Image (tube, rainbow, N blue to C red; front, top):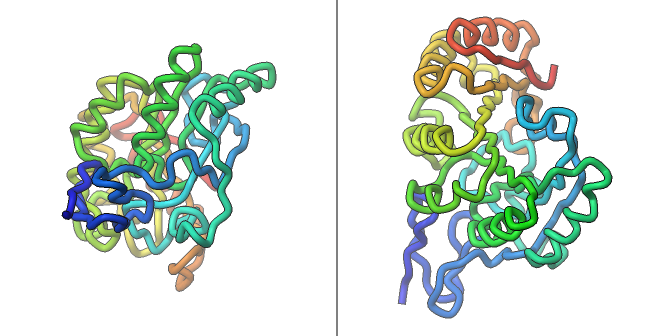
Length: 275
């Protein structure tokens, strides 16, 4: 019997034992859940600014963890080694929520304020993030999610009470761009709008030469973001050739600075990244 996954708009219809497009969610014994629950491929104590979060407890550190899987197909992915990996081809360590929270608490003396779910797309591991975040909140730890924002409204609304901050990728401001990546712009815009009502939100766009680097697109994007809240910190980051997009060079520095100036017409806090 097929079951439909309700986490993201793909709504994958899964037979018993079948994985969804994200490679992380599976129909297991009649329940669609994250097969990668507690399977961590990466863990590091990072500066909070690396997420990037510039206006959420600046100067602090956060325990950053990731698994594998993603529900978009970005040919320029900067973390494709884990986000696009097949489960059988990546090393993971089993870390259950209680163990992760315990480790986060032990790193408080090193400046840690909580847990960041990041590196791959964390929300394909929805149940793991939810369970960890609930436990972390009980122990006074902060919860941060770094996400592509491609999630349905209902599960996002249920998760938001446990989150303190999010950095959401707004990859471009055209449906055409998102369709190439197997997503849609309106879903991500909705995620930003919902999250901005409940927790601290910062937004990031990776500027790719010839794809999303026009002043007109940045004008529309920054104007829309300002309509949500002109004080949302916005990060404009420089692209470097990665994964399946090696046919062009890094984003010219003057492009980053020029687009940042466009965004500043609407937004109070604009930061140039990877420059």
